[in-house]
Structure formats: C-alpha cells, structure tokens
Length: 229
Image (tube, rainbow, N blue to C red; front, top):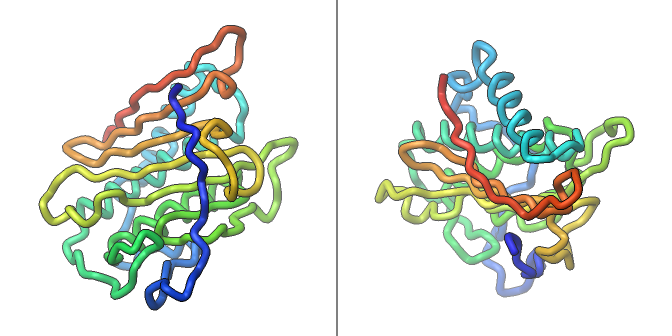
C-alpha cells in the first residue's frame, strides 16, 4: 500500500510544553522580507497550476476541488523554494514546536507559505502542522458549489535543523476528506505529497485507487518537477 495506517494526532498542550509552544497561528501571514514575484509573475503561476492540473487529470483525478487541493500544495512548494533559495538568516525564533525542536524563523515562514496557499485555494476546512499544532479552521468564506472540502496535516519544512549544511530538505503533506484530523488514519487519506528541495524542486504525489476515477484503477505514485520557465 502507498499510505500507512498511522493515526494522525494533534498534540494537546501539557504543563511540560516549552514556553510559546507552537507559536504560529495558521494565518498565512506573508514574510515582508521575501517576494514570490520571480516565480509568480508573467503568468507563471497560471502556467504552473494548469500544468499540474493536466497531469492530475491524466492520472485519473476528476473532482475539481480535489485537484485544487493538490495544486495549492504545488503553489506552497514553489513559494517555499523561493524562501529557501533566498533566506540567509537561519536564526532561531526562541521557541519550540510540538516535537520539541527549536524553531527557526525559516520554519515559521514556510508554515505561513503553506497556510497562505491553502487558504487561497478555498477547498480546505481544517489544517494543522508541526509549527501550528492545533486544528485551524481554514474554511472558505463561500464554499464552492457542490464541492467537498478537505483537511490537511503537514510539516512545512522537514530537516530544517540541517539547512546550514546545504542538504536536501522537504515538506510532507497528508490530505483527508471532510473536516477534522483528530483520530484519522492513513487509510482514510485521499492523497499524500512530499516536496523535495534540492538542485531541482519536485513533488512526489501518492494517490490511492479510491482517488482515481475509472474501473480497475490502482494505487499510484508519481513525480512532478517544478520548472522555472
């Protein structure tokens, strides 16, 4: 099977939690020091989204909101790549995340990049991350007609502690149908995505058979490279 049966749990606050445990709030506030213009200008964002949409359709994905959900993770990945390529100050934020790791300002900026992308997509109900370890309501103000909503659990920057060594790092995403993450299992996932940032930026997308239209569809994993035109 592509997806595991591990339960997704959102850590609850305890008396042993460090000060300012999980300080981010899921607002998706953009970092004022960084611009996404180089990857978004001159229609690049539209071209990128259309290309990923076509790839997903070719893999048997038909539901529009589900496509938008995965495409939004492609946008988050493109923006995180910009942050990683231009972020010089890898200073600590003075807080720890839900796993007890010291947070970099970089972790929080990448977390915000994801929340910003999924809020703009308008197809998610709930999201939580390693840096924002509580379920955050990201429901759109107006729901798309007849379209389902999804929930997202993610680590915006896995491996940030080795960022100064210039090793490859990544983002990890799990998409569940409906509203809520607590008590959900891997088998309930409708997609999982890993983004890898290195000499090139790639998405590895895993889809179970239930997420693909048509009879006799199997589980599938495929790679997409984000190309800067």
